[in-house]
Length: 404
Image (cartoon, rainbow, N blue to C red; front, side, top):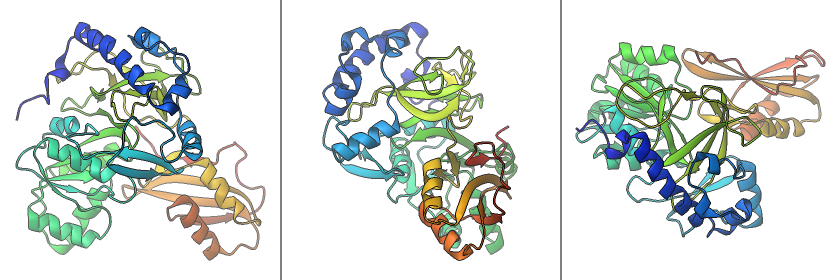
């Protein structure tokens, strides 16, 4: 296996600037052929957008903008440039396109950097249901010549047995589910020692969990990707921050604005994708990060970010699912007897836990639990508090997990 996925990863600063000066105007012009994107960008001269400074003058695009446009102009709001092979649904709902074309979501670069390639059998435990995560990683595995076992989520005993029977060498999925499989395998007396690599996303990879995998002989690395954008950044063997993918341009801006922050300052991740089929320009992810100075010791020369550092709003990702303030509001609306609700995200045994605190009297806890499942799409512990006893700090979602 060669050290790099392709020559793009080691370009000089001058080569990168020249490539951007060509790619940006082309992509802006392409985006303007999509009615929704053209309406959003307004009267822009595509030929003048040749660098980051010019790009920063364009308006920010948010998920709420996509959602509103899709309601008015179903199904994609006029933000795509061609017919799609696949359609996916994310919470909102937001509908995204996909394709079976080689490495359409650009996950291959990440898998290659992790050491996965020909001869590997990847147990893909990302969901294949509604969201594109499963197919994103399957697409990337094909790009590096690996074999995929499309396991999806759940049925842990079968997952562990299959990993042993097939001689699985690599895992793809949310960070904590691999531990569940390994623990189940140990309980069943199975040999899962051939799993030596793990590529994870969809949630925070906590240092203690990464170390536990390392103690079991598994090198675990993470990427930062979204259903809309595909792969945005990924860890390399150097393990110093995340390297921005070659198919996107990343800015870090002051949350709520489009103004770039100084290098090293924490701000919201804004991404411009060079994907010609889905040309999202200055798409605000709602996630926080910061640019790292210098280049990676691994020799890859693109910008590095510090990885996921929280949300610009109160949205939290729990057990791989986003929980948003508006979902909490929908939950409260179902129960007139609930005066206030607060979501607490913590960790227990290297797994995410969710506690739903409510202020109420005379509540039916079974009905509340059912509403939590229906509105938040997760199960959680229910705590009933007397009216007026919860903190008055404005928080609807309190993420108490440590990311250090």
